[in-house]
Image (tube, rainbow, N blue to C red; front, side, top):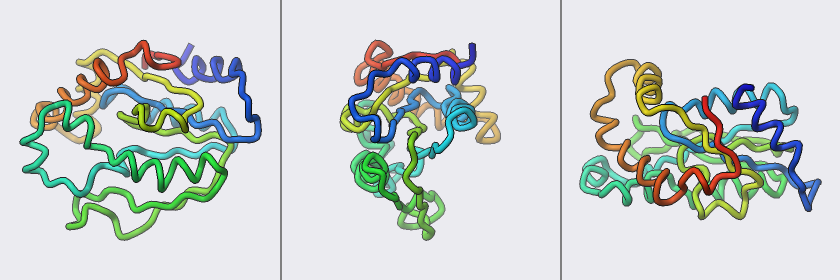
Amino acid sequence: MTAAREILEQLRRLDRDQEDSPILIALDGGSGAGKTAVADELRRFLPDTVIVHCDDFFAANVAMASWEQMSAPERAARCIDWRRLRSEALYPLSRRRRASWRPFDFSRPSGLATETVTVEPASVVLVDGIYSGRPELADLMTFTVLVDAPVELRRARHDAREGGDESLWHQMWDPAEEHYLTSVRPPTTFDLVVRH
């Protein structure tokens, strides 16, 4: 059974109090785990679905030199601007309202793109990205999924996606992800863990 089919099977079993409210699903997991692939597959099975990418909410206001000085727990806590993710994307979509935000853009001095992403309300909102299951977002989520894969496979996928050796990236961010997935949101705290 594929990861997406496992998730669909669990969604069918959900006992929901508010049938008319959208389903928000956090697809969390380390870089290269396959979260986006699972989100894309789920969207094929679930009509009226939108995807919100956590990478759009990378903390644009923190300089690279500052990241280098932070501990792994500090990086894990600060790398995604969860307040902006919550207020600009998840809260409106959870209320069946249109959501708009400026995504992260490394090439811009402000760290934010000039164009705005606008997402219409939908019955299912897939929140794709590491840190999507943060405790600060839990009250908005209907279901949380940890997409998991062996570390070596995740690294290989990440490097292939980025076009080469990402050793420096891994040196900076792997410890933050490990801290998050062991101390903040260990696997036992998710509604479902799938291998991809």
